[in-house]
Structures are given as C-alpha cells and as structure tokens.
Image (cartoon, rainbow, N blue to C red; front, side, top):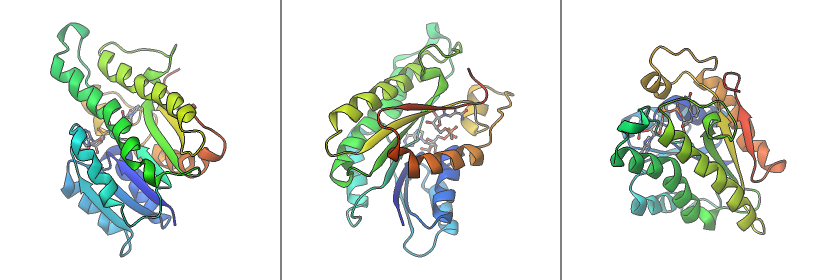
Length: 229
Ligand SMILES: NC(=O)c1ccc[n+]([C@@H]2O[C@H](COP(=O)([O-])OP(=O)(O)OC[C@H]3O[C@@H](n4cnc5c(N)ncnc54)[C@H](OP(=O)(O)O)[C@@H]3O)[C@@H](O)[C@H]2O)c1
C-alpha cells in the first residue's frame, strides 16, 4: 500500500486519479476547497484508506495543515501537485488578482507543500508536478494564457531546481506537461473545444507515472499530449 497525496481532487483529473489509486488499494489524502466533492470519494474507499482536507491553497500559511493530516504516515510515497487555476483572458485585461491567484495556486502552493512535507519525503518518494504543454519552451502557445502558462512553467523550472537541491536525500521530483483533457477547467477556459483525452485516461497515465517514474527520472518534464505539439 502506497501513501498518496493529491491536490485538486474535487473534480477533473484529480478526482479520477484519487479513484484509481483507491482502486489499487493505496492510502489517499485529497485536498481542495470543495469538501463535499472530496467526501464523495469515500464511496470508493475501504475503512481507513481515505481522508480529505478542505483547504484553499492560496492560503500559504494554512498549507502546513497537510503535514498534520499525515502525521501518522511513515512517509509520503507520491505527492501529486495537481490543483490548478486556468484563467483565459487577453493580456491587456489581466488584473493583479488574476496574477496573484494563479501564481498562488500554480506555483506557490506546490512550492510550500513540498517544503512542509519534506520530513515525510525520502529517496523513494515521488513528487509529480502537473503542468501543461503551454509551459514547455518552444511548444505551441495560445493567446489568453499569459498568466496560466507562465506560472505553470515556473513550476517546471522549480522541478529541475529541487531535483538538484534535494538529490542527496530525495524525493525524486518530476513534472508532467499535459495536453488538452476534457475537464471542467478546459470547458470553462475554452468553451466548445473537444479534447482528445478523457480525465480517466490521463489519470491512468499519472497513476503509472507516479508509481514508477521516480525509478527512471529526476528533474524531468514528461510530455503527455496527443493534441499540442
Ligand atoms: N484539462 C486540461 O486540458 C489540462 C491541460 C493541461 C494541464 N492541466 C492541468 O491538470 C491539472 C488538473 O486539471 P483539471 O482540468 O482536472 O482541472 P479542474 O477540473 O479545474 O480541477 C482543478 C482542481 O484544482 C482545485 N483547486 C483550484 N483552485 C484551488 C485552490 N485555491 N485551493 C485548493 N484547490 C484548488 C479544484 O478544487 P476546488 O475548486 O474544490 O478547490 C479542482 O479540484 C491542473 O493543474 C491543470 O492546470 C489540465
């Protein structure tokens, strides 16, 4: 049984990711603001297998509560920094609040979460930062995503930096740059766009990558996309 933390599990890819890890018998802690949706995941869990924490990840100070929530765990095997905020707005209209919230959710929260969980992360732990193809240098870019993609690319850079700084004692830390997946985030940001990948399909890739990718990669960004070059 592996110990798994998943942020942003109240819907979309994170929800499917939690379901699939629970089906494998792993112990799962989920985090997001919508506690009612997180509570629904109990239906897929055995006694003692699942817990959730209602937390707004823009609140930097409160992120320390995650360490309390796993105080009885020997270690964290996989931390998925999956929560994300995607604002699609023209550059000229982007407001301070858009920048702040995006950088808090997409960059500062993963940063702080890795920091507070360090006592529970060892050489065989795996931090998976869920990013986007738009964060990959030289990839196709979309107008309107100046804040989203740049904040996500900072997390890609952080992945490389922490892999180096933490290499003696771990954890292994990698990013996955996703192409389009048919979730509410995509529907809200790009109404009418039909993605080639469903949330359960991307979650299956992330389950496998989380469990096995740390053996082969550290500080790398894997591209998981059949849509965006
Ligand atoms: N869908 C795509 O096409 C696509 C493509 C590339 C990358 N990605 C990345 O994949 C990840 C999952 O995306 P998705 O499409 O499944 O997104 P989604 O359906 O919008 O889900 C996002 C999750 O993040 C949580 N979240 C957002 N703000 C939060 C906050 N302040 N505090 C705590 N939790 C917060 C939401 O929970 P609450 O609202 O309950 O807090 C929700 O569970 C994201 O990092 C996204 O950037 C997605």
